[in-house]
Amino acid sequence: MGEIVSRRKLPMTSRIGRAFALVRRVASTAAVTVLAVLVVGATAQASEEWLTDYDEALAESTRSGKPVLTLFTGSDWCPHCRTLEERVFSTSEFESWSQEHVVLLMLDLPESGISPALRSERSRICLKYGVRTFPSVLVLNSFGEKITEERGYRGTSASTWIKRFAAKVPAPEAVADLEEPMLTSLGEAVDEARGKNRPILLVVSGSRDKTAIIRSATLVNDPEFGELAEESFVVASIPASTEDGEPADASLEQLLGGTLEPDAVEVIVTEDGVTPVFMASGSQSPKRIVSGLRRFLVARQAARQPVPTRR
Image (cartoon, rainbow, N blue to C red):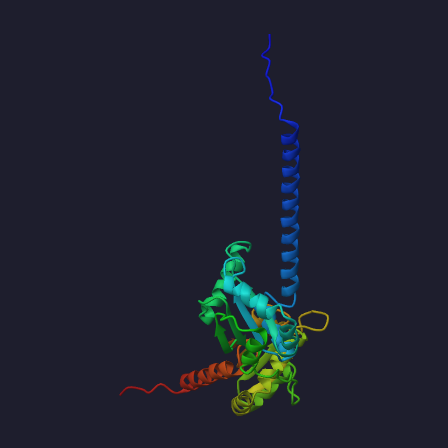
């Protein structure tokens, strides 16, 4: 015969009590779930105006003329970061000020939730600017150069924080346009350089993209660059591709060693229109590019000096 298993029945009051306890647990779990959804939604809404890609933020700075306000944060482990976001960055006062004056960039380094590649990229940016304190807020220009910074958060109100920080943030710059007509083809530059016996300096934009055009114009219109170019080079500003996205010039593609991203700018020096002898990224500031060009000219001059003969 099979074993008869007896089950002890709970008294009615106990069964009713257990039922109510179960209902309370379910209701509590549901409430926590709803709260989590609301918190995530609020965070997403607060962050939707913030870019999260460094290069994209610099490109937007180039297009708009506004500096980049960069927040380095740790969303799931840094309490002061969360407090700063709640008391300052989530306020309507900050939203109103930031829309007019800055491009917003948030670089979040949480303990979990991002890919190893993204963590490595953001960590590299932290190292670049020496960020070791969280939160840290840096203001960068469109070339990624640091203008000002503030480390940590001391609990100040939104109005006080904005007022203090606004005093350090430069006004948006006027977006650059080319001031003077220039040579616009490699062939023209080669012909003119031949007559002047000068090297050719090409400012090549990846396309007619607004960001690339502005970066080119910012460099070409820079007074120090203009003075050096007038003294030592034949300068041409050339798009690498047509409006249809096709390569504009096969020789130009050969000089570049491939294709450029649509919003990229490359500075190339060539003696013959075929072989590059100097290259620099147009994402650098005009000051850095000019410094590189000066070093190139010194090396070029030294290479042309006759070697003294020994007797």
